[in-house]
Image 1 (cartoon, rainbow, N blue to C red):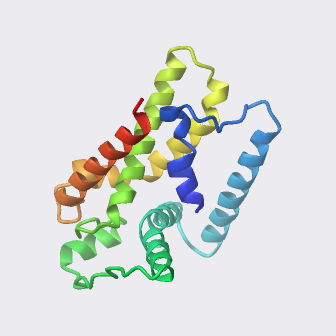
Image 2: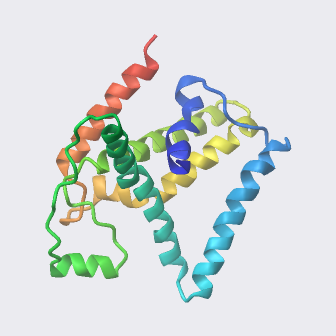
Length: 202
């Protein structure tokens, strides 16, 4: 739920005018920052003490975001539909065979998005929405908007953008078999267009 809040709710001010931010000088700001820094700092120290590296810890954080926006969401949706007595498609069985290239990318810490799956659609949508939100906030600051009022939301959007770098790479820059499929990219583009039409209509 926390990742859904960060990715989908916290940036609504950038495209709908919904105000969620708190001022940098206000006491509420520390209620946002302290748990964030404390939780990530504690997790990082535990990871390093147990013999992990900073890069592996960062990839582990990225995996939590990916799970939160993909498999956790679909599992919750399927469970809710079953409780309501609505039939669901269930999970498709996919090949678990790993070739040499996949094994090499795994040990290099490169994420795999090669399987065409609807689970990647909300993941890609969240990544694009936060990228656009961050640049919209940046443009507003350059045009004279108060940076203090946008700081928290720009930080959340920027943090998600940094975490989503492997997703942007898989969508645009990669040419190997681990890149995001064209079908998934088209599906999330159409879904984003429908969402934008719904939110930005007069």
